Amino acid sequence: MISLIFFCMAAICSASIDTLEFHFDKSVFNYYRCNLNWWNPTYSWYNKYKGRNPQKGLRKWLWFDVPCVDAWHTFKSLMIVFICLSIAFFRMPVPETWYNIMLIFVVFGVFWNLIFNLFYNKILIKK
Image (cartoon, rainbow, N blue to C red; front, side, top):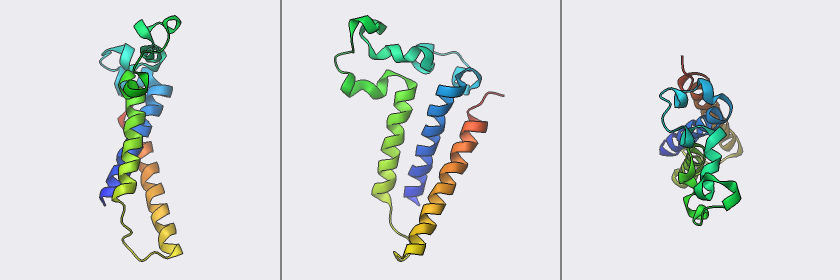
C-alpha cells in the first residue's frame, strides 16, 4: 500500500511537469503570478546559468542544485525519488505467479493514469 501511495505521488509530479510545460498559462501555477522566474518554464530554464545568462556558462554547482533550479526540475527530481521509494517499499501482496505480476502491473498502471489525468486535466488547471 505504501508503495502505491509513493507511485501515485510520482504520477502527481509527472502531471505537474506536463502542466508546467504545456499549460502553464491556464494552470494553478500561474494563478498568483509568484516568481515566474522559478515557475514558468519559458523563463526558468535561465536559472541554470550564472546570472541567468547563458553566455556566462552553467552555474558551478549545477550537478548538485538542479532540483532547486526551477519548478520543472524540482517536480522531476521528486518524481524520480517517489518512483524509487515505491520500488523500495514494494512487497508482493500475493504469490509471485505470472498472472499476479500482470495484475499488479495493471493496478499500478491504472492508478498512474487515473491520478495523472485527474491532476493534469482537473486539479492543476485554473477554473
